[in-house]
Every structure is written in structure tokens, then in C-alpha cells.
Length: 184
Image (tube, rainbow, N blue to C red; front, side, top):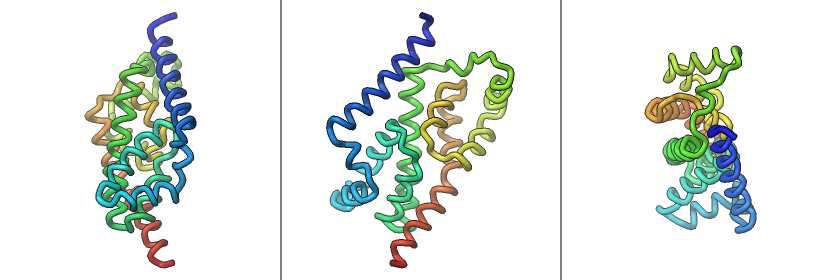
């Protein structure tokens, strides 16, 4: 078995382990809009840290980022929900990148299939532009985080593109959900 398959197997085992631990401890049962909202409010100022950790763990459990962004808008309102969601999303995708890159390596950098190679070559040639466009439309979706982490992009480019690309849609979602609560 070559090194790439060993690393991918370790990554899969890690992700399954995180999921199993989440299920056994009951953590995943708390990952509902109401559960997260109550945790954030009950923690007061520390609620942001609870939110950021929950966002990061949720991403590792394959929960799409927009769920947490909507919760931030609901819990904190349009302005502070926007700030909380953008900061927590950036932290979350950074953690995902570090874990996936450390365990899984960069197997997509060595891809041979012409159709896929063309896309990954473009990603390496214009990393910021490519990833900003990806993030504008695909936000903090776990498969996107994992794919980018296993490609040849640098952590710096990944984080800059994530901050730029995720900010507009996450502000929009937070504002919409924040205003929705205020209108009720």
C-alpha cells in the first residue's frame, strides 16, 4: 500500500472516529439550531467561543457551514451574527485545512486524469481567484474544505480566499436570519 492510501485511510479513520465520539457523547444531538442557540446565549460572552468550537467540530462532522451562520444570525442578530459567523467560519475552515492536510497530505496535487488535472492546475496557477470564486458559491462546505486541503494550494492562499469569498454570502445569510428573528 503506498503512502497516499495510508494517509487517506488514516484521514477516513479520524473522521469516522470524530463522528462516533460525537454520537456516543451526545454532542451531535446538541447540533440543532435551538441547541446551539441556547448554548451561545447561556454562555454569555463565552458563547462566541462555544459557537466557534461547535462550528469547527460540525464542519469535521460534515455539517454545512451555512447552518451555523444562520444560527449566528438568529442568536446574535444581523450585525453581531455576521461578525461571529465570518470569524468562526474562518477559524473552522482553517482547522479543517490543517487537520486534513496533516493527516491526508496532498494526493490531489498528483492527480493524473486529464479532466481533473486541468481544474487542479488552474487552481494552482490562480489560487486566490479560483478559491474566492469557489467560496462565493460553495462557502464552508466540508467536501470543498477537504478537497482544497488535499490539493496543492498553500495555507496562506486558502485562508485569504476563504475570508474574502465567504464574507459576502455569510453576512447576507446572517442578516436575513437576524432580521427574520427581529421581525417575529
